[in-house]
Amino acid sequence: GLLKPGAHVINYSRGKVVDTAALAGALLSGRVGGAAADVFEREPASAQERFENPLQGLPNVILSPHIGGSTEEAQENIGLDVAQKLLDYLDTGSTVGSVTLPELQLPRQENTHRLLHIHYNRSGVLSELNQRLSDQGFNILGQFLKTNDTIGYVVLDIAKGNTPLAMEILKDVTATIRVRSLY
Image 1 (tube, rainbow, N blue to C red):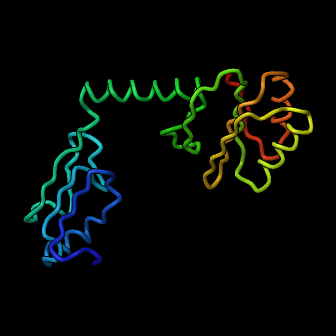
Image 2: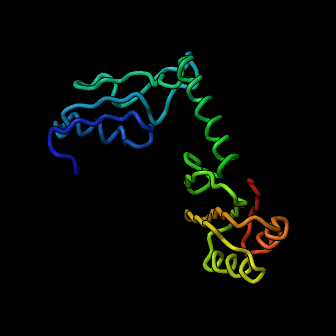
Image 3: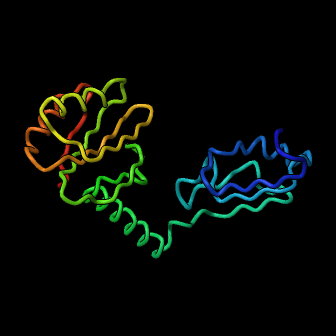
């Protein structure tokens, strides 16, 4: 109902993004001028199962199978992308593309120790982390924080020194989930 009259709807993201029954009604009434989709709310589980969708047979509608990730080339590219993202996390702490951690991308820092602190997103965690490290004389050379609704992710670059002590301090911070030393 919020679309401009005559608008065209294209869905190639996820099937549940579009209410296809409502779209079919809008197409039949002329409110929507056309539609195309290669993803659907309900897709057949196998080649033997019949495909049924409210948009089938309607004028100004193009329905096609979603095969973007099904080619050998696409599968190879997906594998390479996932492998590179894992290497970036292991090498620098980068979480770009992660669905479970807030996204953070960092360059590698020379002459530091890099520590990762994953915690539940609660007020005061960063303050406690900084205070505990400061009380033990650690010099924080760089600090990066990113949060989502439930998780906080801090990457710390500290001056070289007693990294095992720093790790123990970070493990004792309230709401800690995991602590890891990168380098």
